[in-house]
Every structure is written in structure tokens, then in C-alpha cells.
Length: 309
Image 1: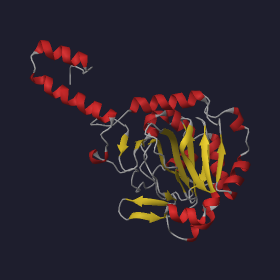
Image 2: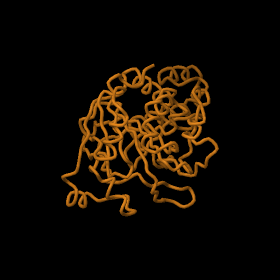
Image 3: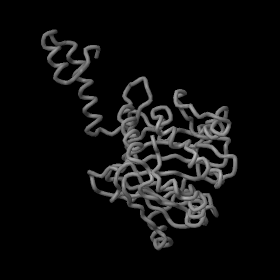
Image 4: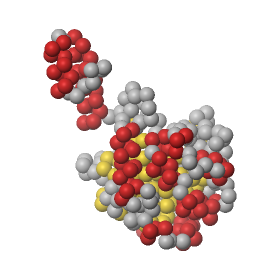
């Protein structure tokens, strides 16, 4: 399976590095093959939503009006091949040198109605210390898995230069409009678009009130500092190209003391169409236990409830 298109592979990593260092970002449409995107979509659908399932699955997060599948390295061989691809690893070498580590990863969906704050990602959430500033260089790979004509990623050009002068991570709309409006760059794009940007840069998802809006995105973050990361769950079956460089990159034997993002539980789960459907089916499955056998079978068949439920 090919991950990247021939057009993207032809681009010299040095050209990408120069743009990221200068402007803070690089964008390329038609970077991912349709086969790769279809495989990711299939893997996400198989993982589905986590409600008392003894497997790796997704979660909803009310605060950001988003769906997350954080542990993609346990759910998708295609994602493993993507984030450990030679093109990616060689790019990271040009940015960081020989030492760098995968810090965070996820598939997520943004829905309409959210208003994300302008922020930087040069911070981490330590399980013991809480939010902690990091001065380590970092790069983020963002890929659109759906056409994006609204709610697109936005970045303040060259903000990776001045944001490092302080330890602020969040910026108000008023501050950006008054001081950096001319530097605002929006990234609408087709499915398969890749964005690579400096984690010190100020960015957000553009607010949208379109209730039918969904932006499907792949995300992973790499930093030069190898001493910490979010806990990474791996499916050992995927590790068919493991070597010392990959072990370092994936953090084998290293501390993983950052909190997983987002921090969710049953109380951060919204009552939307999907969650309501699952909860309704669960309620019906409990009630049918008190219904005579001949009706119970018909109800289970109608609601597609397995007999062992």
C-alpha cells in the first residue's frame, strides 16, 4: 500500500524544512493516496466508540465538540506505517538531528459549533505537575481526511519566532485581531492534504456555526526532547520494521508521564445521535430480560441486539 502520492514524494525534504523554518508551516494538497485514507477510515470505523468495550476505541469530548481515537498505533497498521515512514523520519532528522521522539498522536473529528482558542502546542500536561512549558523544538503533522471548506486550520505566520519569547500558550481573539491579523493564514484543502507546522506557532481551528460541519484529521507530534511523551499503546503485530532508530522514536524504555489528551470520562460524553442510539439500545436490551421469550426474540431481532446481551 502506498501512503504518499508520487507528487509529494518528489518534494525534497530540504524544501519542506526551509518553509517550516521560515514561515512556520508547509502545505501540500494531494499528499496522501486514496487507498491509505480508505484504510484509515476503515480502521477508525472498526475501533468505533468506547462504551464499556474491552478494546482500544474512540471517545467523545464535549468541551471541544470533538471525537477522538487517540491510540491509533494500536488500532491501525496503516497509521503505524504512516508515522514511521522513511519520508517522515528523514524529514525529522533534518529538523532535529538524530534524536527525536513521537510525543502525541490521534485521529479526531471537529464538529460545527465549536470556538477553539488560539494556542501553541509547546506545552505538555504532566500527570504529577500539571501543565508544563517546554522549550524543546517540535513539529506537528496534520492531514485532512475530508474536504475542508469551512472550520479549517488557521496559523499565524512566523508566530513560532515570537511566541518563544514568553511562556504563554493561549491567545485571545482580540489580541490576534489587534496584533497579528495580517499574518493569519487559513488552510482550506481537499481530502489528502498535509500540513506540517512548528508546534511553537499560534494556531486554531476556524470557528464555524455550521451544525453539519465535520473535519476529519490525523495528527501526530514529534519533539527533539526524548525524555517524555504521552503513553503510547502499540499493537506488537505492526512492528515489522523495528530498529534502534524506531525504538528511540517510539520511546521504548522511556518515561511516558504526559497525560493523554483529551482527558475524558462518561461525563464529557455528549448526548448526540450516536451515543443516544447506543444508550437506547442498551436500555432496551436490559428491559427485554423481563419480557416473555417469544417476544424477546422478536425485539432483539428488530433492534439488532445479540442474544448474549
